[in-house]
Length: 452
Image (cartoon, rainbow, N blue to C red; front, side, top):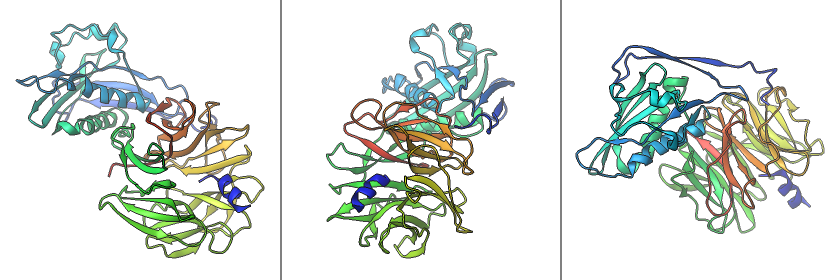
């Protein structure tokens, strides 16, 4: 929740400080099913470079390998899903299908592929796939080739339901990323966000790429600040009822809703502690908006801030020993860090006249929204105040940053495409910014979590 609304109601990555991390990816052709040759392929990915060179990959339509031509739409749908995953990852550049020149007799095994057809169009990697259907069951087989050597560097079969084809392809995409980069992609993660398509601010859940949208709340009022728990099994949010703010917890597994805090005044901007058993939020139980720690029953465990200013938007460090928050105690909204062991408070941001919405990543970076000239942009900074990095640049208002569970991506809301806010994701270095929500109204305040 922005500090300005409370005030009204009350009356880079720096290249000098972060060394480039070059991953030598040695893919051994041992223990990977469907592998026919022994060999290796090396790829080089600099995951922190502001101008990382993407790997060109060709992903042609999958071949139907069953007896009946069932679900012909999957020929292009399945590779389309994994192609979009690779594009959103920021590591790969999927090639345009119009450039493909392979013959119709080409198969999905190395002995049926004319690799020169792919090298001449600039492909470094080639992903071939086939599928078959029996009733509601779907079987998919994918093989990844190094075009230069003609060697297969990955292969796997996967089974599932036709209706779960997106999940199946996300799972394979994650596995390929793990093989090539040493870590999984974000393809099985989930986003919660505020949407206004119903005419009210309600909470929605979607896949990380904006698909499979599900409306979670039906309060028909103003519902804001969704925050998914570390395990993704619970979600907290604030809803306005009878001119009051109340904090609710939604059990994502049991589909039940519990009221956590409805104290007089404010019950807003809640955040999970990494242990998943405690919540920080802003309350006005002592008159001034301060941040308190409560348990999952709503019991106050500790008052975390005590200052004449307004303290909001808590965000915990990965180890739970520190908390970033926003306060106007210096005159304008700025981000501060509270050491929960020593109770020492230090100001983090000094540039910009309005800094808000801090989010602390697993990789120990803090993202926040900052306004210096009338509109907001996303920045990141080290917890020690070094390495300020600007993620967005003069493309409308960009607000509400949150990190992917692994800290390699940022989601945020942006108004760059017109009159409404939509959710965008980008690599942590700001590259590869992509819009993922396109539907009616605004989509705001994203929260990112592992698949539950």
